[in-house]
Image (cartoon, rainbow, N blue to C red):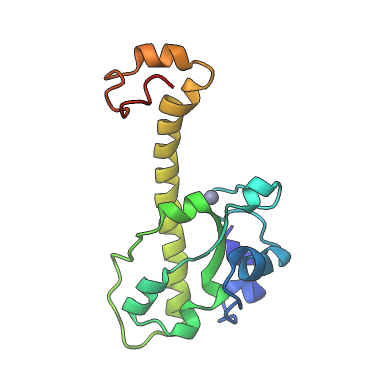
Length: 171
Ligand SMILES: [Zn+2]
């Protein structure tokens, strides 16, 4: 199940560029009104609470810089056929994504563009899942465990408290 399934023609047509400069109030909101309400990568709802709403981003599947480098027409890479809703976390995990396996081309046809977009989506989804799992381990080991157990944590912290700046140790 791809996010584009709900787009006009299954997302396999060059759609208009979404207008506005504000993700939550303009182009991202437009996607919400048209049925996308959660992060396409991790499934977190972006509308079920105000705190989640603040995490809403509208994200290029083929990143804008990569689209330029590869020679993809601007109208295509800025089309909302190439835009999905993502949470701030997943968006950040794919920030520096590069399409390593594709060289620039002078001519793209639409089929090639959509093949590229779908392959990039799959690859980013895998990378993001990996990054999320790694972040979750960090959280579980270092943050969640600490909740309500601060005193014990301080005594047993690996490497002691040397990594804290002076002044924070007595907090
Ligand atoms: Zn997410």
